[in-house]
Length: 82
Image (cartoon, rainbow, N blue to C red; front, side, top):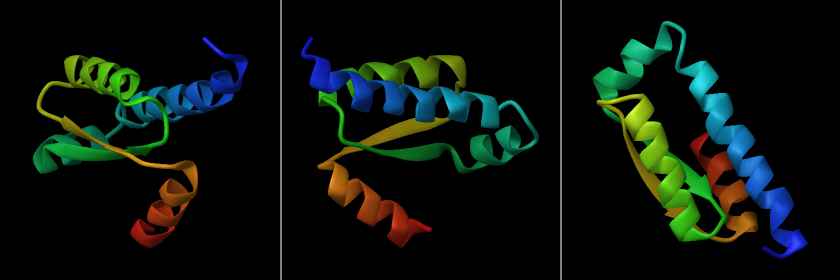
């Protein structure tokens, strides 16, 4: 794996696994009620899908929709969603 991929992958893993910590509190019930999350990422799609499957296995009832695009577009989308 090229070294230039290490930072985006590490950052994405922090976001995803940071989300696991978020999901441990009372908001877990609200997330299950909604039933889905959208993950905006710029990492390689096969890797992102593996991470999403891992999240879905850890938290049944919450589907992950992976939206893969370039990093700049991800930041724009996050700003729009916010």
